[in-house]
Image 1 (cartoon, rainbow, N blue to C red):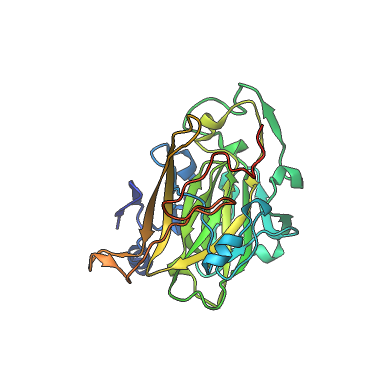
Image 2: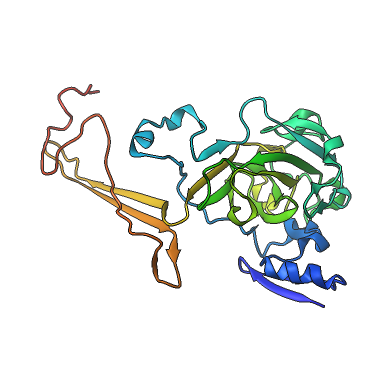
Amino acid sequence: VSLQHNMSGRNDKVPEIENVEALRLAWQSQRPFFQHTHGIKDNQDQSFTAINRVPAHTPLRALDSFEDARNASIEQGYADSKFFRLLTPSGTRWKFNWVKCADDAPYVEQGIGFKGADKWGDVPVPMSWEMAGYGQPIYTNFVYPFKCDPPNIPPGINNVGCYQTTLSIPEGWENREIFLYFEGVSAAFHCWIDGKFVGYSQDSFLPAEFDISRLVSSGKTHTLSVRVFRYCDGSYMESQDMWWLSGIQRDVILYSKPAAAHIWDYKVTTNADGGGGAASAELAVQVQINGYDKQQRKLGENVTLTATLLGPHMLAPGATAAIPPSDCATA
């Protein structure tokens, strides 16, 4: 039996599978049967850079009220809130397994994750695994650290690190969309929840985000498994005057948004005439709201969108002020 399934603009042809029930479940879950193919070659296929990854958008917080949003201090880093969990606070360690060759990497099993992970050692997360004593840091200027044969990577040097940990979904996250957010993983990775495939991403220094709503339950604890490749086809583009370091290098975040409707992306543009003296300015806000019911062609609930410009010098509608304000320091 063979199966072709289109996902994220990609066709995955799955080889013959004797277990018909497993094939049926794979089709029902709308995922290719990655437990069979292992997905090892995903990182050397230049026709795609992600599977199930959410499109990039403005960085978002998940706050419960206007006051919480107004008081949030982004510059001070992340802090847990009602609908936001930092999975990698200072001192975090995850179970870890490192192999020199991708073909020797452990497999993920349904309902378990990486079997035997409880016997692994552990490493700090986030941290490049070379800094934890696994593999060798490499510095190159303009020379590739491997034979130039795109999109292929020599298997003997493509180290793989496998991570496993648990994540608990807070009570009160029912009827919400739940997202798993990796701020930076080098160079490519697959991830699973309880052995069920979540997605794949490559791009060492951009976030990778996945909607895991259907794989987790509020108030439950789940197993998160991550398999990271040191190199991928994108490494041909990333090669530059740099240190080659690998692994989960930035924070991992869990957050949720109301399923009925929530702000998903926004864009702010300004047009100010600062020619001197009086000035006029225009502020345009473009917002994308998720939660749209395609069958009913409407949002799950009535939504009112309000945009408020906050700052030390706030004007009432129609009011004017000198620029710069009299209490501002001038150069």
